[in-house]
Amino acid sequence: MHDPRRFVATQCRLAAALLLAVAALNTGCISTDRTVYREEPRMKVEFENDTAARIFYEAEANMRDRHERTESRTEVSIPVVFDHKERVVTGDTIAFNQAVRRCDTNGDGRITEQEARIFAEQVAKP
Image 1 (tube, rainbow, N blue to C red):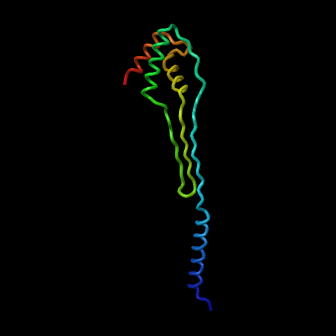
Image 2: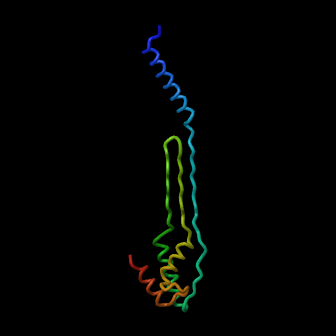
Image 3: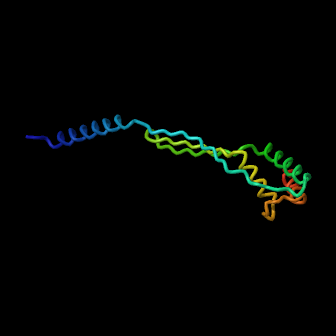
């Protein structure tokens, strides 16, 4: 009659062939590559006098020169099936707003000459 070992070997071959066929059909790859530019509205700020404004803007420019734009990258991938890359780049207004928040220590929206000098000293330190 039928040899059970031969029957099992045939089933194994069929299973292997089916597995190879499914693997060959599923070799497609979903891939995304995205760059996101993050911006926010520029904060309104007043200055006590022209000296305060000049000191603040000089310090803010020095800070920007040393700390270029920030950029973060995220990459997720499952080989052969899925690949996702995302890059987030922050804009200039975010850096400006952070400088205003850091300088305006009492949060009243008005930068005094004293606040500007303290901010400039902090920025000058390495």
